[in-house]
Image 1 (spheres, protein in one colour):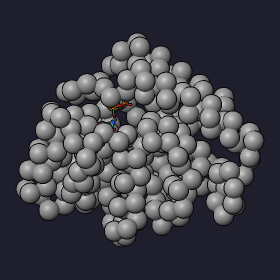
Image 2 (cartoon, helix red, strand yellow):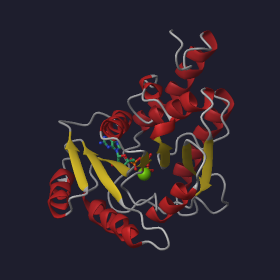
Image 3 (cartoon, protein in one colour):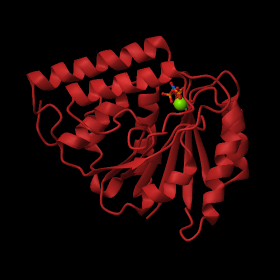
Image 4 (tube, rainbow, N blue to C red):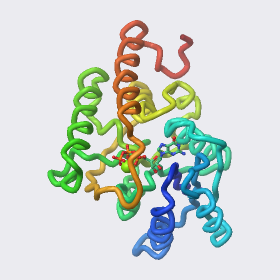
Amino acid sequence: MGILIFIPTYNERGNVARLCQQLNALREHQPTPVIADILFVDDNSPDGTGEALDQLAAQYPHIHVIHRAGKEGIGTAHQVGIRYAYAHGYDTLITMDCDGTHPPEYIPEFLAEANASVAVGSRYLKRNSLDEWTWLRRIMTYGGHTLTRTFLNMPYDASSAYRRYRLKQIPLQLFDLVQARGYGFFFESLYALHVNHFAIHEVGIILPARGSGESKMSFQEAWHGISRIFTLWFSITRNRKRYLLGVEG
Ligand SMILES: Nc1nc2c(ncn2[C@@H]2O[C@H](COP(=O)(O)OP(=O)(O)OP(=O)(O)O)[C@@H](O)[C@H]2O)c(=O)[nH]1
Ligand SMILES: [Mg+2]
């Protein structure tokens, strides 16, 4: 039994302490305290996020940090978090961004959902979900959603990183099917879960604008993400069984 909250970081020095404070406050949450360990994977952020995290880890025994040598992508960071969670026997994994756009107060709702293998924080269930976002970021988000709905045939918010996985219901091999190293990780992993009939539940969330620091969603990253949707679509059109668990190929 145990909950791990996983958070990837790259240049989030101005956000880490506040997020840890908010997550620690959930330990007193009523009627259901959220007692969770927290794992950060930092990619040697030039702004010193790694050192700030080391200080937090020294202060709180339930906070852990993995340091990687350089920026290796958000997708591979999530793979590290997922593998850590399985290796340490956690039965529930929550993943979220560090920039303040994923308010921790939704975590009790993610945990309360009892049946689905995956709960996804969705930006498309509430009208005012993206009110604080710039129009450019909204267009990118809706554009990506239209593509994943159309080409991957999934109704969910497939690029949302705010998720809850019940690891005892999902074999680790499911994540071996995912190849994307960047933002494509999110729709590729959700696609693999979807085609293997793992129950997916959506929780409507309202996203504030990013806290301090800058977006890592560069034009190049966005382009990689879009081309990954088409690569994935091409690959599943050629081989429908490519993402089925237990099927070679
Ligand atoms: N370890 C690691 N973390 C990353 C990397 N790229 C992004 N992140 C983190 O992943 C989370 C999401 O990144 P964001 O820059 O907020 O990207 P986004 O949420 O898609 O876009 P915006 O919120 O519009 O900026 C943040 O906590 C980042 O610090 C990376 O290459 N490695
Ligand atoms: Mg963000």
